[in-house]
Length: 224
Image: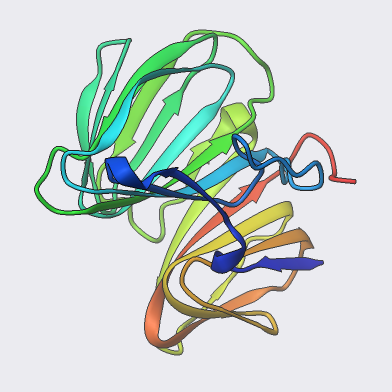
């Protein structure tokens, strides 16, 4: 079963006056929808746009696996465990907040920043926080988040190129840029598909090609 969610359906958020524009795929902050709390292990998929000099001041997280994908620009990350890094397009950053961590996310560059951040519920709460960054991840290299029973696949498709979508109990596909035909559905930039019990699903790049993030998740339970 495939449930397509369009970019225009996302909940708006952030603080535009402070240079922060957010779009949330799931219930977030004041936008509460009891029927849209999670999909498999995924509890948030946020598109964030930060103007130069804008950012999120130090704030806490716990019991969440936070994976960040930069679309354009450069993200400055600092956390309470001592990590300070700059994340660029093509890098995968993961912050395992575990029992608790605080971090800062800013655009310290002089160009706009756009990134996609996914939050995953861990299989077991608690533990010590950890941090990892993989620079320039390749299409053929899936990124595992075993703490959440999840795997991220990056697909960069030329026009008309085809790729198989991983099978799984829960698969979440997000179009970063371009257009994709996913099964019988046409998806544009910012659109996403939630696929339950995915089998034999194929993605085809649109006329200008596409970049696609695909999450493969075991998931702790099925949504009702």
